[in-house]
Length: 100
Image 1 (cartoon, rainbow, N blue to C red):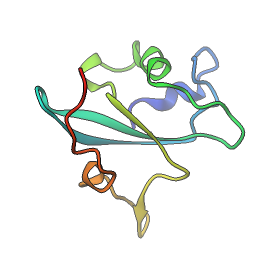
Image 2 (image 1 turned 30 degrees about the vertical axis):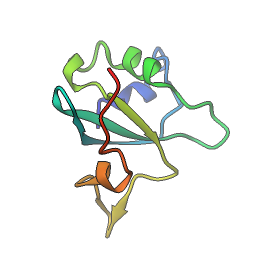
Image 3 (image 1 turned 45 degrees about the horizontal axis):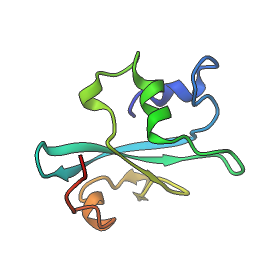
Image 4 (image 1 turned 45 degrees about the vertical axis):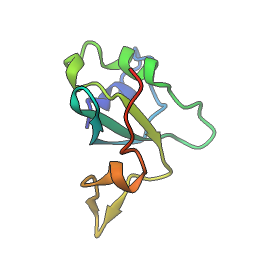
Protein backbone atom coordinates (compact mmCIF):
# COMPACT_ATOMS: atom_id res chain seq x y z
CA UNK A 1 0.00 0.00 0.00
CA UNK A 2 1.23 3.46 -0.89
CA UNK A 3 4.69 2.05 -1.36
CA UNK A 4 5.30 2.10 2.38
CA UNK A 5 8.09 -0.31 1.66
CA UNK A 6 9.87 2.97 2.41
CA UNK A 7 9.42 2.16 6.10
CA UNK A 8 11.65 -0.87 5.58
CA UNK A 9 14.35 1.05 3.69
CA UNK A 10 17.14 2.15 6.07
CA UNK A 11 17.75 5.28 3.97
CA UNK A 12 14.11 6.40 4.29
CA UNK A 13 12.97 9.14 6.65
CA UNK A 14 10.20 6.83 7.92
CA UNK A 15 12.39 3.74 8.37
CA UNK A 16 10.94 1.54 11.13
CA UNK A 17 8.20 4.07 11.95
CA UNK A 18 5.26 2.46 10.09
CA UNK A 19 4.03 -1.11 10.58
CA UNK A 20 0.79 -1.11 8.56
CA UNK A 21 -0.90 1.19 6.07
CA UNK A 22 -4.05 1.33 4.02
CA UNK A 23 -5.11 3.80 1.33
CA UNK A 24 -8.68 5.02 1.03
CA UNK A 25 -10.48 7.63 -1.02
CA UNK A 26 -11.98 10.77 0.44
CA UNK A 27 -14.01 13.62 -1.04
CA UNK A 28 -12.44 16.90 -2.09
CA UNK A 29 -14.40 20.02 -2.99
CA UNK A 30 -12.21 20.83 -6.02
CA UNK A 31 -10.51 17.59 -7.05
CA UNK A 32 -13.59 15.44 -6.29
CA UNK A 33 -11.51 12.71 -4.68
CA UNK A 34 -8.08 12.43 -3.06
CA UNK A 35 -6.08 9.72 -1.30
CA UNK A 36 -6.20 9.28 2.45
CA UNK A 37 -3.97 6.90 4.37
CA UNK A 38 -4.40 4.96 7.58
CA UNK A 39 -1.04 4.60 9.29
CA UNK A 40 -0.15 2.26 12.15
CA UNK A 41 3.07 2.94 14.02
CA UNK A 42 5.02 0.79 16.48
CA UNK A 43 4.37 1.49 20.17
CA UNK A 44 6.68 4.14 21.58
CA UNK A 45 7.78 5.30 18.14
CA UNK A 46 7.34 8.88 16.93
CA UNK A 47 4.63 9.05 14.27
CA UNK A 48 5.67 10.35 10.86
CA UNK A 49 3.78 13.44 9.72
CA UNK A 50 2.34 14.02 6.26
CA UNK A 51 5.42 15.96 5.11
CA UNK A 52 7.68 13.05 6.10
CA UNK A 53 5.38 10.56 4.33
CA UNK A 54 5.57 12.67 1.16
CA UNK A 55 9.37 12.82 1.46
CA UNK A 56 9.51 9.02 1.74
CA UNK A 57 7.22 8.55 -1.26
CA UNK A 58 8.74 11.08 -3.66
CA UNK A 59 10.98 8.53 -5.42
CA UNK A 60 8.52 5.64 -5.14
CA UNK A 61 5.09 6.97 -6.11
CA UNK A 62 3.69 9.64 -8.44
CA UNK A 63 2.61 12.77 -6.56
CA UNK A 64 -1.13 12.51 -7.45
CA UNK A 65 -1.14 9.23 -5.50
CA UNK A 66 0.34 10.76 -2.34
CA UNK A 67 -2.03 10.91 0.63
CA UNK A 68 -3.68 14.22 1.43
CA UNK A 69 -5.06 13.03 4.76
CA UNK A 70 -3.21 10.91 7.29
CA UNK A 71 -5.17 9.01 9.95
CA UNK A 72 -3.33 7.27 12.79
CA UNK A 73 -4.90 4.04 14.10
CA UNK A 74 -3.84 1.14 16.30
CA UNK A 75 -4.76 -1.30 13.48
CA UNK A 76 -6.05 -0.95 9.94
CA UNK A 77 -9.81 -1.62 9.84
CA UNK A 78 -10.57 -5.22 8.88
CA UNK A 79 -13.52 -7.59 8.98
CA UNK A 80 -12.87 -11.30 8.56
CA UNK A 81 -9.27 -10.44 7.63
CA UNK A 82 -10.44 -8.21 4.75
CA UNK A 83 -9.55 -4.51 4.62
CA UNK A 84 -12.53 -2.18 5.19
CA UNK A 85 -11.58 0.80 3.01
CA UNK A 86 -15.01 1.31 1.38
CA UNK A 87 -16.73 4.34 2.94
CA UNK A 88 -13.94 4.65 5.52
CA UNK A 89 -13.87 8.40 4.97
CA UNK A 90 -17.56 8.63 5.85
CA UNK A 91 -17.19 6.34 8.87
CA UNK A 92 -14.36 8.56 10.16
CA UNK A 93 -16.37 11.76 9.60
CA UNK A 94 -13.97 13.04 6.94
CA UNK A 95 -16.66 13.91 4.40
CA UNK A 96 -16.08 17.62 5.02
CA UNK A 97 -14.39 19.93 2.53
CA UNK A 98 -10.62 19.93 2.73
CA UNK A 99 -8.67 23.11 3.25
CA UNK A 100 -6.35 23.82 0.33
